[in-house]
Length: 49
Image 1 (cartoon, rainbow, N blue to C red):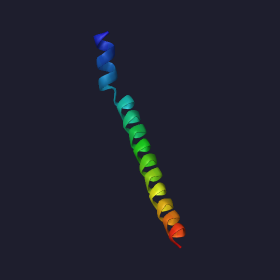
Image 2 (image 1 turned 60 degrees about the horizontal axis):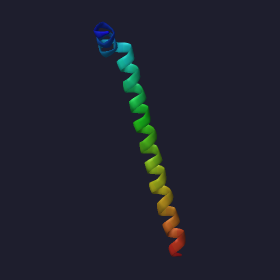
Image 3 (image 1 turned 90 degrees about the vertical axis):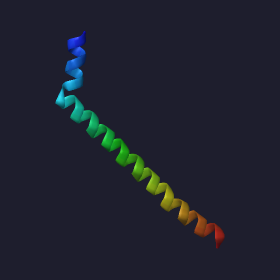
Image 4 (image 1 turned 180 degrees about the vertical axis):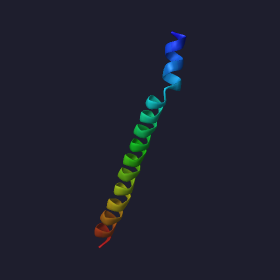
């Protein structure tokens, strides 16, 4: 069991894939946040006029 755990921890392919997925999720969340911020400004301008 210990050898299987160390293989998972030191496997470069698994680590690279997990880092890539984490980066992709971060980019998607930042994109959603920017989308909400820009759409919020547009709604505020239309409501004040």
